[in-house]
View (cartoon, rainbow, N blue to C red):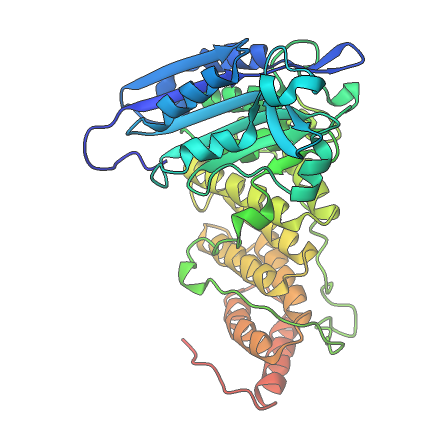
Length: 438
């Protein structure tokens, strides 16, 4: 949120608990428990602001117009605003509209007993950009879920930052995450990170940590989606002037830089690692999704299932967080930079992957004793990704940087540098203008 705007400000926190999500008489999502836990967090911490703040909690409300009135009042706040909703999403089968179910909402009277979802966006649409955060911890019932799949998202307002999760109907008990009436996993992780983190993470970082450790069921909708983010993975640390957006086409021509007599491997064995030193991870969540609160297995699962944009977003958010806590050249930051490089490789973005590997190599070299095996492995990762490029402009542009990195590695097998130079020269002589060397 932009908390430094001109003029006097007064913030607002609006917490709304809707109807419970129930399956076979078992509570799967308990909004009242979520609301009670979140209400215990000081408003200044929730907002990340010290401005005077009003806090309103709506729990057990049955009248949609009461909710509308509170939304309207919150939207009128001149300062930062947080709107939190937890409960059940439902739909009007006849009109095909989404609704936020309230206590007492029934399938036969949705239009009269629930809040039309568009009311939320309608009240927030006039607010200035950068001052509004909407946090959602929801479960969709069998009427709402097909609409969500059709929409591919859950729209709110273009001017609001929206973070949250929507669980599918009938998720298994192992993924209930609060199904016993306790606080759900996603909300609990937000609260725990706010309490434990030595420096308050940004909202997107909190979302990344919470989604990674919440034990979400398969198929859960995580907001914002990669498409909504328009997300491009950011520049390498200390290399901000080198951010590029390449769209290259793979071609069959892919020379190997592996020496013929069994030199360094073409592709280093660098799976997504699990660093021993990491930020204060929050235990909990499903072990298949986030072992010991560690988001790495969840991120890797996203990438393995083809959800590369979401995986890259979460990894980037965690990297920014550990850089803020431990420093740009810390071991934790370097490990996350390399995780991002491997995720880019998995996504087939070999230009970005090569640049990330090169950036990690440069930072490692700048550290005392940084010319060890970690720097060599990062260089090997860059070489591997470079050899996967089939577009001349990308090959030459990345290759010029790569040769410079390889020259700076004192322990590198000289055949690596010789072969890289030879490949670069061959592509340069193929007719592409030679880029300026720095």
